[in-house]
Amino acid sequence: MKKSDFNYHLPEHLIAQKPLVDRIASRMLCMDKITGELKDQQFVNFVDMVNENDLLVLNDTKVIPARLYGQKQTGGKVEILIERVLDEHHAVAHLRASKSPKAGAIIELDNDFSCLVTGRDNDLFCLEFNAEKNVLDLLDQIGHMPLPPYITREDDEEDLTRYQTVFAKQSGAVAAPTAGLHFDQPTMDKLEKKGVKKAFVTLHVGSGTFQPVRVDDLSEHIMHKENYSVTQATVDAVQQTKQQGGRVIAIGTTAVRALESASRSGQLQAGFGDTDLFITPGYQFKSVDAMLTNFHLPESTLLMLISAFAGYEHVMNAYQHAIKQEYRFFSYGDAMFLST
Image 1 (cartoon, helix red, strand yellow):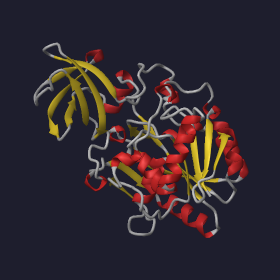
Image 2 (cartoon, rainbow, N blue to C red):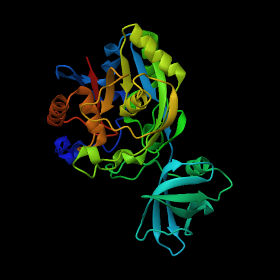
Image 3 (cartoon, rainbow, N blue to C red):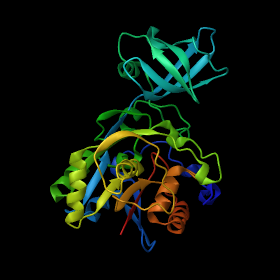
Image 4 (cartoon, helix red, strand yellow):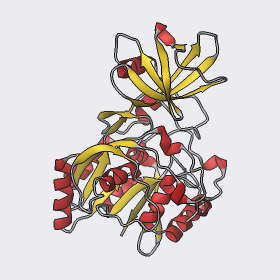
C-alpha cells in the first residue's frame, strides 16, 4: 500500500487542544474489527465492555518534561526537544535554531544551566549536560512538557498531570501513550473490583511518532526506534489469559508495539531493547486480540498500524464516521475501541 492511501481530511476544529475536565468524559467509538460495525459510546462504558477473564496491557512509561529553551553564546535562540536520555549527563535531541549549532557550541539554559553540543547522530544532536544533577532532575526543574506539534498553544501547569497517565512509572517518554490518558484511578479501581486483570509493558514513546512518512512506498520507510521492555510476569499473564479464553486488550498502539516486538520469534518472550517494528496491513498479530486507541494523524504509522489490526476499509470508514459525528482527534481527543 501507499502512504497516500492513508490520507484523510480533518477539519482543524476537531483537533483537541486541551483535555476535557474529566479524564473519563471522552466519547468512544466502538468497532467490531471483523464486521466493521460501529457504535457510538462513552468511555465510562469501557468497564462494562471488558470481562473478568480479559487482560489489559498498559504502557507504564512516564513523560519527561523534555522541551528546553535556551540560547547560543552568540545570542540566537534555541529550542531543544530531548529524544532520548543516554545516561546521567548525556542525551540526544532535536534542535530548532535559525542556524544549527556546531560541535563545541555551548547552549545556555535557565537557572544558569548549560549544555555542550558534542556532535550529530543523523538528524539528532548529541548533548552533554555539565550540571551537578543528572539530566532527568534538570528537566524536572526547568523543562516543559513536550506537547505534540498539532497542539498550537504553550504548555501550562495542567499539562504536567494531564499529559501523563495515572499509572505512569518509568521515566523516559517524550510523548504520552495517549489511550491511557482516558483512565482515572476510580476507573482502575472498578476494573480491579470486577476482576479484570492488568499487566504492564514499557515503551518510551519518542518524538519520531509524530514524524511524517516521507516516502509513498511504505516498503522504503525507515521506522524510528523506541526502547521497550516486556517482563516475564507480563508474558505469563498473556499466556494464562489466552489459555483461559480471555482477550489480551492492548491499551494504545505503544502497548501493541511492545507486545508484538517481543513476539517476533512467533511466540511472546520477555525481553528489552530498541524496536523499529513497522506494522502495516498484511501483518499477522501474534499477541493482541483487542485494542483501545485514540484517533491518529493522516498518513501516520499509527493509522497504518490500526488499519493492519482492524482492516483498512473498516478503519477508514470509521474515521469518516468520527469526523461526521465530530469526535475529538489526536492526543487529548476521544477514544476508539477495536474488538470482537
